[in-house]
Image (cartoon, rainbow, N blue to C red; front, side):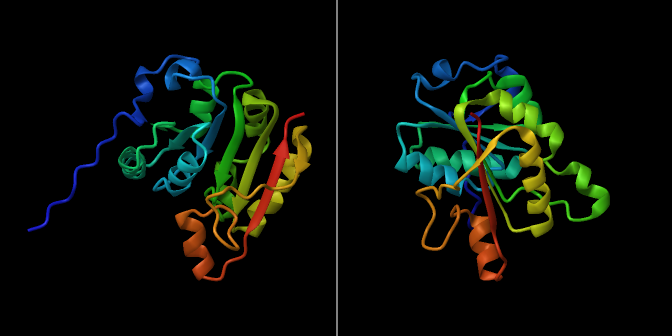
Length: 206
């Protein structure tokens, strides 16, 4: 009988309870390379590809779902992605409590939960109350990149960004994206097979 392979989280996955506040990214990674953060890493597809393509960049991945966090951390370890660390945490809490001022070069948010029912809209990540956190952690010239398949949520995101003080810029497709893709995540590939449209946006802190 085949047994399920054990997922090994360390050293990629970090125990948020043991981390200093705020984090010292140079100490964490052993270098002063730029730091990019992905919220909602899922199975880690984006981070695996980016870490390999851009070894000169450090990546931090945030994931709340325990199984996905463990799976992604183990996957990144198996691929030898030494320039990635992951945490299992609620995103706003982690960014607020642990990420230093002006320390992030790019914040990646791909296919966030749209909470489509109107009574659940207040649970959406990208809203006015979130943007002061984004402005604080981004370095001058730093960017936020967002992709969603939900038009209603995208329209809200556009309004939020317009009020945020950030400047709209061209969306940069990461190297992990294949032909016709915006990101190259599992969600995007699944949704593309279903024929869903995609909406992308990027904004920069001056």
